[in-house]
Length: 462
Picture (cartoon, one colour):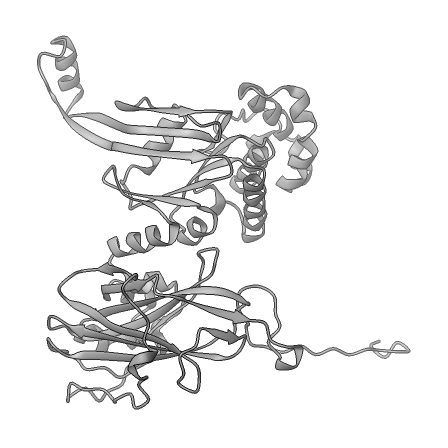
């Protein structure tokens, strides 16, 4: 085991025995194993990975995939049935914040007691107790019995204790979603601090933006088995594919009430795109990664152009980028849907939208052999930097499409069926603009608005 590797898991498996009744369990025990009265359930099977200092392993998967079981094995709450695992260094777990706190003791007393049980000397904790108190932001309650705490105060106390102990290995299960948004922002800042401190982190979350932000690699589990271990973005895309939701991958957080698809459907055709780029403008797709169901459609071409129709990959903040993409149908489908997702270097989806969001007219039925073309324009009011893009192709049923404006986003989300996602095609570079252009801002995107100021002399405001 390399000195940089702090967590090593080899062929790990965990089997549970399921009995129909307590009597069946007793009968099997009494027979000394000669009579089998249980069903074997493998919560984990053949899981292997290594984690180095300063790395974060994200673990994702649907409910029941085995995520929590894996964490409990790593924290030695459960023993594995097969395989081995080794952890070098002290490990702290945020599986159940505040477990073991004594309700009769104060917050301060509970921190000293809990850290002592974890093996930290009192002097080590005394040097950090003030930082913990300030981070928790519970005021005078820090020195009052925790039995009078609210659930939010209880969580704040527990989290503040863990993040200041600076473990070598930290196991986190959804803990970054505790408290209000301001406390969550502090928790995220602390997570980044721990990674900079070279702590190894095992992180389970259903929040894909958290997984993409922190993970250096991501493990996708389903029914106890490893489906994928590698780049976070690809793992998340595969996870969304499992969920059969193209719109979920775009991370569009809107209300579909404003979507009103066009009504000219009878011909089975949509308006032709007159300014389709020439052949030399299209990208080489030989190295692209295509996710989806084979045999329904295939991607014919993808081009990225500027407002003059010329191939372009470098833009200034505020300029428009034109995405052209085309698919050939290998089977009949209902209403076609296409979209683009932009992802920054931190694997965060900063923008995603599809043709349904744009109220694009589309045929109600699209036959095998048809070529479906899209031209999608995006104004790049986003931070300077390099972005990857993914092109998605999906379909929605005719009746659902016609009634889309009557659905909320969550309802419509389950109606769209993913067909193909084409990623790792290329990148676009967004460069800073001058102050005169009016596109300076902080953060990821430029939200529209205005700002006025005035100066008063001689108490004119009174």
